[in-house]
Length: 127
Image (cartoon, rainbow, N blue to C red; front, side):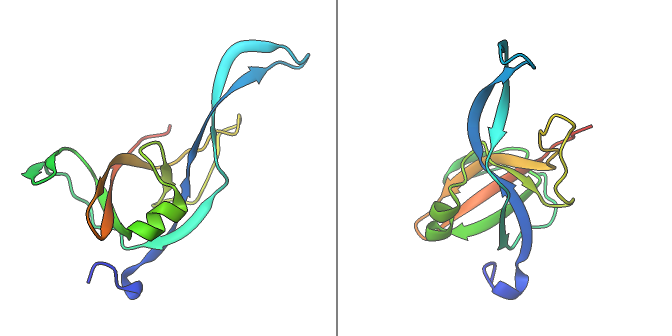
C-alpha cells in the first residue's frame, strides 16, 4: 500500500557532489571551500506523515527522524541518494545569495531491505 502511485507526491532532491575551492575576483584561491550539489532531481514517492519517535527494530535503533519514504532498490540506484542528499519537500527550491540551497530536509539514515530502501529524513532550519 505504501508504494501506490496515487499516494505519491513530487519533490526535489539535490545530491552532494563535493567541495570546491572559493576563488576571489582576481582568480586566486581564498582558502575557503563551498559545498557543491547536483542539479535539481524531481521525483515522486509516498512521504510519511510527521513522526518523531525512536524505537528498536531488527536493523538497530532508529532515533529522531521527522519523515520517511520508501523506494525500490532500482529507483534508489537510479537516483543515487546517499546520506548527504538534501530535499525540498515542504517548500519550493530556493537558494542563498551565494548559491547554496536553503533545503528543508536532509537524510538522517538510509536502510536497505531485500526489496526496497527506506529513507529517513530530518527537518532542518535554514534561516
